[in-house]
Length: 84
Image (cartoon, rainbow, N blue to C red; front, side, top):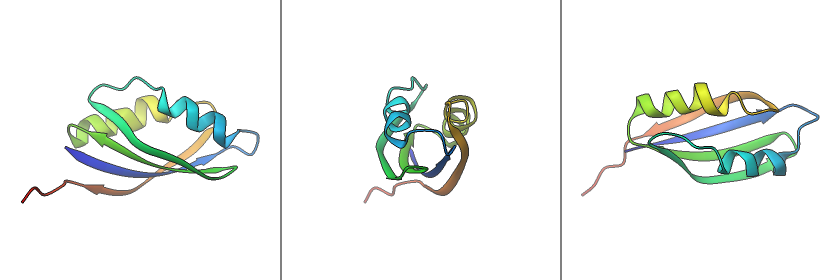
């Protein structure tokens, strides 16, 4: 399991709330959004939980990048949780 923290920037004409809703409904193999929050009209932060880093990369490049209105997706952090 890896947690990928994303900063997503939107086109000026895109709606943050609409894009947030669309992101939450994306069908992704071995990945799901743990949280998605709109910071402003053009900025969204999200946590994507995936089985592997490769699954996360595929989800970002093939699914999230193709969402209408998304201009740029920045990976802020990739964390592999440690179980004690």
